[in-house]
Length: 123
Image (cartoon, rainbow, N blue to C red; front, side):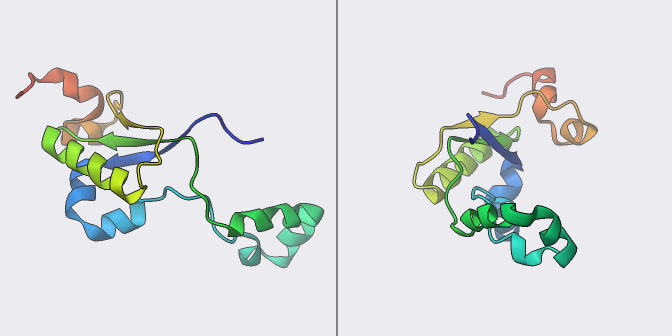
């Protein structure tokens, strides 16, 4: 059981570096916490004996192996975000992925993802 590799959600580097609230709400590098008490009685009934297996989720353990996916166009900001995440996780990451493939309009607006290739490098 388990996974071979897990990725975080895409984390916008500039927001991560500059906004403490963003960091707290997007630094989701841990497995889910207690799940079963929040379920409705009918949901618990449907789960039956499997509810006992959910108790393992009460122990917060780092997801591993874990890749953190960063987005951004400012090299210094991306590096700073990567270093902050590395420190926060005590270096227990498999790697850091730079999102170079996102074709969404928000990526065009922010000049990251696939749109990094549409401009010349400043460095």
